[in-house]
Amino acid sequence: MQTIQIDNAELESFISSKYGNDKNSLLNDFVKFVKTEIIVNDIKKGFDEVEQYKQGKTYLTSAKDFLEELKS
Image (cartoon, rainbow, N blue to C red):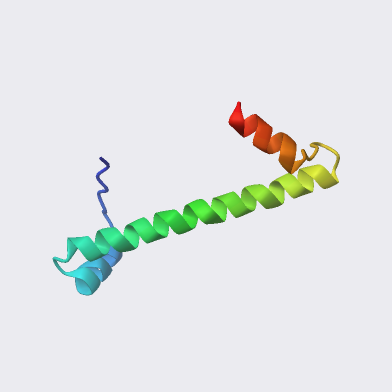
């Protein structure tokens, strides 16, 4: 369980005006934000890996080898 303390009047005012006491909606929107950030980071990681491949710093494995690795 994580607790977030916000010490920013502008953010506190926005959250209060948008959500009031509706903590469920605030939590749902925060979860959506975090999941979006996870996806963005995964996409960035993919682009970074492509760049490393282009520079010869990494190699690609076949899908078959990847699946075998996952099974082990």
